[in-house]
Image (cartoon, rainbow over all chains, first blue to last red; front, side, top):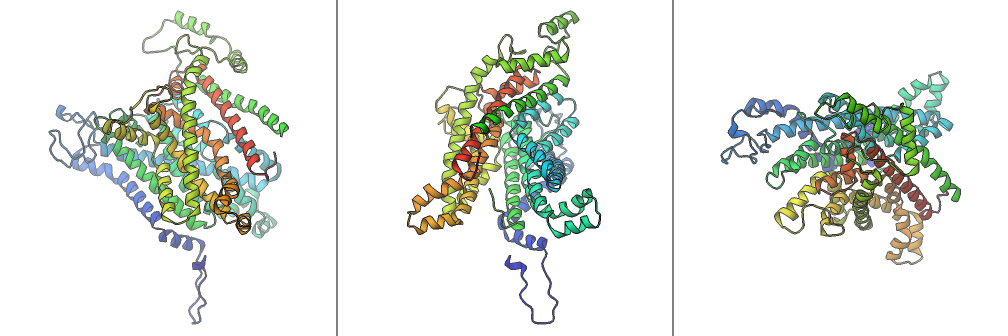
Amino acid sequence: MASSIVPGAVDAAPVKGTSLWQDAWRRLFRNRLAVAGLVVVAVVVVASAIGPPIIKATTGYTYDYIPSNVELIKAMPPFSAADGSFSWTHPMGTDNAGRDVLARVLLGGRISLMVGLISTFVSLVIGITYGATAGYFGGRIDEAMMRLVDVLYALPYMMIVIVLLAVFGGQSPFNQLMLLFVSLGAVSWLTMARIVRGQVLSLKEQEFVLAARATGVSPFRIIARHLVPNTLGPVIVYATLTIPSVMLLEAFLSFLGVGVQAPLASWGSLAADGVGNIAVFPWQLICPGVTMAVTLFSLNFLGDGLRDALDPQMRKG
Amino acid sequence: MLRFVLRRLLTTIPMVLVVVSLTWGLIRIAPGNFYSGERAIPAAIVQNIRAKYGLDKPWYVQYGRMVGNIARGDFGISLKYLGQPVNEILRTSLPVSAILGTLAYVLALVVGILSGTIAATRPNSRVDYASMTAAMVGISVPNFVLGPVLVMVFSLTLFWLPPARWEGFSVNLIMPVLTLSALYMAYIARLTRSGMLEVLRSNYIRTARAKGLSERQVLLRHALRGGLLPVVSFSGPALAYLITGTVVVERVFALPGLGNYFINANLNRDEPLVIGIVAFTSIAILLFNLAVDLLYGLIDPRVRL
C-alpha cells in the first residue's frame, strides 16, 4: 500500500491522491507475468477477430471451405503445399478434407472466447443477484439461500449439463451455442454468489447503507446502486478466473461431441477431430491444443495478477 | 456426531431424488427416442416396443417405477445394449473408472502436497517459482491435449508405453493416470502452498519454533494439519470434477469405463442407463462429501459437527 501514500509535499503543488483503481493498475503493470498474459490474450482476441477475413482475402480459405481441386483435398503439414514444397498458404496445415487449420483454429478462438465471455457474464448476473439478495436480507432468507448453494455444490452438475446438451442439442448449431452459454453460466455462478454475499454482509453494516436506508431508498436500489458497485473488485478478479475455467468446460463438452456442433468448431472439437490422427497428422491436434493451452495459461496469469493487484491480502490458491 | 451423520444421510435421499428427477424429466421431454433409427418402423411394432418397456403407461406410473427401481438398487435393463441389465454394465465399467480416479487422486495428493509444502517453506525461491509455473501449466493444459501428447511422445516416438487399452493393473495405466492427475496435482499444489504460507505465519507456529522443535517437526506435526484444510475441502468437489475428467481420459485411451457409456446412453436416449449412472454417481459424490466433512472435523478441532 506504500504507493498510495503520497509523500508529504512541502511545496504548493496540490496533493493528488491515487484511487484504488489507479493503484491496482500500477501494481498490475509491475507484474511482468500478468502483462505478458494480457498481451497474449490481446493477440489471440485480435487474431480471432480480424484473422478470418484476412485469410479469406489472401488465400481464399474460410473455416469450412473445401477446395474444389481434388489434389488439395488431403491433410497437408504446416507450411507445405500439395506437392510437399514450402508454402505460406497453410501455416497450421490442413485437415483431412483439405480445410485450412489456421482458419478453423481462429474460428474456434471466436467460439471459445465467446463462450468464455458470455457464460461468465451469465454466471455474473446470476451470482451477483443471488449473492447480494442473500447477503442484504440476511437471517433466515440468507440461511435458506446459502444452504441451497451448498446443496448445488455437491451435485454432479456437469452430468446434468451433458444430459441437457446431448438430448436437446444437435438441432441447429446456433441453438446448441445458446444452450452452451446458458448451461455453462448456470453451473458456474455458485462461487460468485458466495463471494458477493460475503462482501455484502460486511458492507451493509456501514454508514452509507444506513444513510441510504434512512433517506428511504428501496432495498432493490440499495443493492443495485450502493452495494454491488462496492463488491466489484473481488467480482472482477473472480470473473477473470472464471473465463478460462468456463472455456475449459466448453472444450470438454465439445471434445466429447456434445458441445459446439459442425460446421462450427471450437478448440475442443478441433482437438477431438485431431486426436484420431495424432500418429500421422499430429498438427491437427497440436495446433488447436497449444493455442488453447497458451490462451488459458495467459488468462490464468492475468487473473492471478489482477487478484494480487486489486486485493493484495487475498492471495489464495 | 452420530446425529450429524444420520441427518446428512437422510438429506442425501431427497438430493439424489432431485438429481434423478431432473435427469428423467430432461430425457422425457427431449426429442427422439431409443427405438427410432434411420429406417421407419411400422406403427404396430412401435406399439409393441412401447408396451414392452411400459412407455404406454401414464408418466406418473413410469416415474414411480423408476424411483422404485432405484430404491431397490436395481436400475432395470438397458434399452440399447439389448438384454444387459444396467447393474451389470455398472459392475463391469465402474471398477475401471474407480481405479483410474483413485490412483489419479492419490498421485495428485502426494505430488501436490509435497511440492506445495516445499514451495511454501521457500517462498519466492527458484523451487517455488518452478513448481508454481508447473502448476499453472497443469491448470491450463486441457487433459485431452495432455493425454494425446503423452501418447505421441511415449508410445509413438519412444515406444516405451502402450498407447491404449485396459489390462487391469499394468503399465497401461501410467499415462491415463498421469493425464487425469495433472489438473488436481496443480490445484492441490497451489492450495497447499497458500494454505501453508498462511499457517507458517501464524502464532502457534512461532510458539512451536520458540519451544525448540525442529523445523521438520514444526512442519509435519503442526503446520501440515492447518495448512491442508483447504486441500481437504477441495477434495469434495474434486470428485465431481474427477468424474468429468475420467470421461475424457477414457475416450482418449480407449478405456471401458463409465464415461463412454454415459455419453452414448445420452445420445441413444437409453433412459435406464442414464438414470442408473446419474443416480449412482450422485450417491457416491454425496457420501464422499460427507466423508470429507467428517475428516475436516477430525483434522480441525475448531469444527464441531
